[in-house]
Length: 168
Image (cartoon, rainbow, N blue to C red; front, side):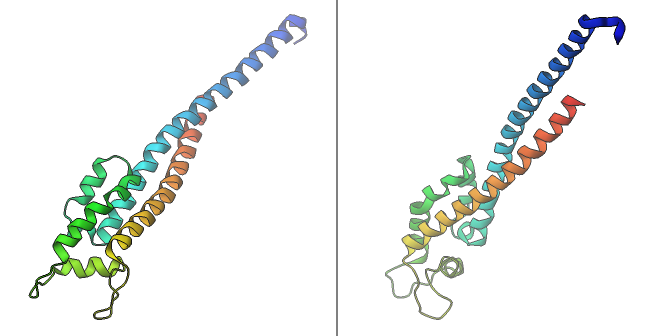
């Protein structure tokens, strides 16, 4: 643009620099929005893993409503705080000093899945408090791994979508 001279060239340079700054700002905002939505998705995935695992392990059958109680904390990692609650429910439902006591079928499933008993008749595995605590710790770790993966995936997707919209 020879007719604009050095003033026009400077203006074009300034406009180009402004656009670059605008794109960088839009990208940063997109990353922040992606991180926020990623955190929400991650927590939801972590809670989903915890709830499904409690059902799979037979905890929900033994202690109806435990999944809802854990879910109400809003934080899947707090599942480990329920070890004593689950143990005492187990002890009150599945054990007795009475000779003619017959434990509910849900107890046997729970005991085998948590390795309190092995599948063979009359064989014992880990002490109940230990088995419950360790299962819940492992469950929290599994949920955390899944939550991080879900958060990262959602964060990346949202940031890319917003960046594309803002810079198009």
